[in-house]
Amino acid sequence: MKDNLQLEQIRGILKEKFYIKKKITLETNLSDLKNWDSLSQLDFIMILEKKFKIKFQLKEIFKLKKIKEFVQVLKK
Image 1 (cartoon, rainbow, N blue to C red):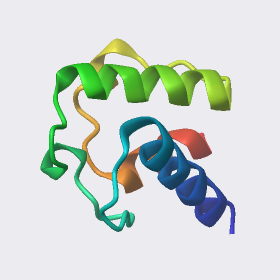
Image 2 (spheres, one colour):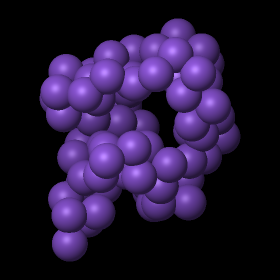
Image 3 (cartoon, rainbow, N blue to C red):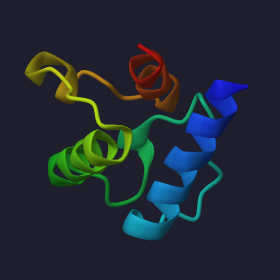
């Protein structure tokens, strides 16, 4: 259930902040999204850190690609 809440929150962020219209699932790979680049990745990470009050480790930042990977980190 918590996964669904986090997925919905991530969908909201991608829709509002990055104007992503594509259907986002746990299997969505962010690098496949139109106009997604390293700057988008950093912005997304910073938004997640602020919203969920967490800190991603430097080695995770560009390693994480799929939405399910972000949800797993948020569950920790």
